Length: 229
Image (tube, rainbow, N blue to C red):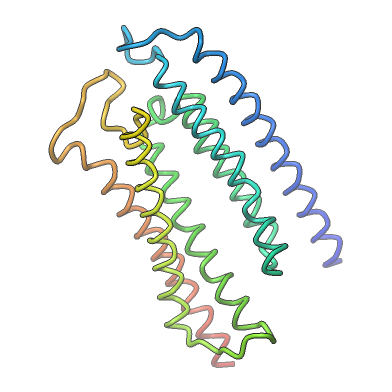
């Protein structure tokens, strides 16, 4: 029965991954085409896209295609068994963040879409931190037994570090390629300044911290209960 459930979840993971990969691939082709046909400069209205918008779409889709293969590379190289459900959630997150967010403009059309995704990613990264430490704890090659509090601290810091690296990536992309990943330009093309310009980044980091903290607290009590058995 367990093997049947594993095979079923693995099939669903592969299907979801294939769908997301196809959508991102189509979006790459579409973005390249629009780079040659879209107007330059400032758009006439909030939802009209110009060349710089399609540069961002192309960049995000290419990055999405690359990072889709990270879980399988980690599993093969380090012999880590990442749960199929977590991999499937990872693919769903990429679909929501890149295809819906950038390609379908959900970041502008759906209120707080960015914060919802950061809440999701923070929780997912916190859970991934627990998976990584559990792998080393259970490995026969590594003689290491970590306390629940240390595992929790590592998972929390891991999630925060990953979220911070993402914000650095957004900042560099905006500076080098003229994109708007940090949303310092509104849908009405108003350029934010001062504290308002920092709001998106700081809100993202705070939501990452809170969501990962919630998962880490649950993980801590789960590990503590397991150790006390």
